[in-house]
Image 1: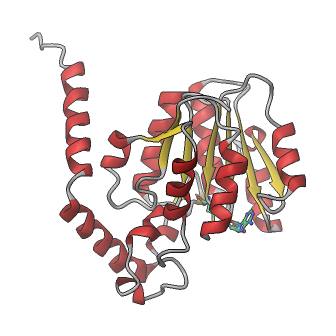
Image 2: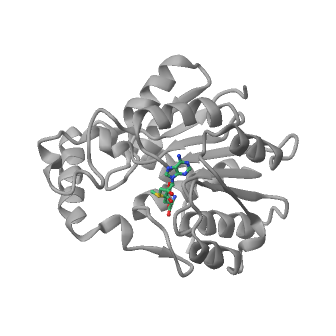
Length: 253
Ligand SMILES: C[S@@+](CC[C@H](N)C(=O)[O-])C[C@H]1O[C@@H](n2cnc3c(N)ncnc32)[C@H](O)[C@@H]1O
């Protein structure tokens, strides 16, 4: 039996649905309510990638995979390594994609000995460079830049200190490193969508408004013409920590 080749049609439908979903404020509100409900159980902390805890929601793991496959970066810089699941996840994708030169650079203020042990003894360790230090410290930035080979396609994920000032400072420092066609991902923008009233439970841990990453990325996007929000990808980001956080680089600095 022969079937019509509907690949283009399938993709076009996906795009249409993503854009429509991005405008569905009611669905987005339901998603926020569910995330707040699930926060009681520390939902973002319940997952792992290849045996290592990854502090991400499944939707963001999927979205990040789509970005990495579509844009094929040579270097992915992540600020905020924690237990290492995210750097392992991205290193495993780069390995599966067959670019032997591709690397993940993980930056964290505090790479604890047991987390370093997990990461450095993982089968994907050889693709990961760990840099310990405050992400916006001059010495850290110098070490990050020194680890990027000339001509590399660079993607950045900001997932460290989620305060407005820190994320904005990271946007300035790391946004400059992202190359044309690659992505700047600002994590935990969801904080910016939750009112203080709704955020009553466990607010200090995850949810608060005003002093958060969404405000920082919006400020940064207002200052530069180098990035645009990917409306298709962000459109489907319900049950995500980072709606409006996935930004495409239009031109290198
Ligand atoms: C949310 S966790 C990162 C989760 C990780 N990306 C993952 O997906 O599993 C935040 C991390 O940021 C680190 N951090 C906090 N402030 C920082 C700073 N100023 N510079 C670098 N890292 C920082 C913390 O030590 C913590 O490990």
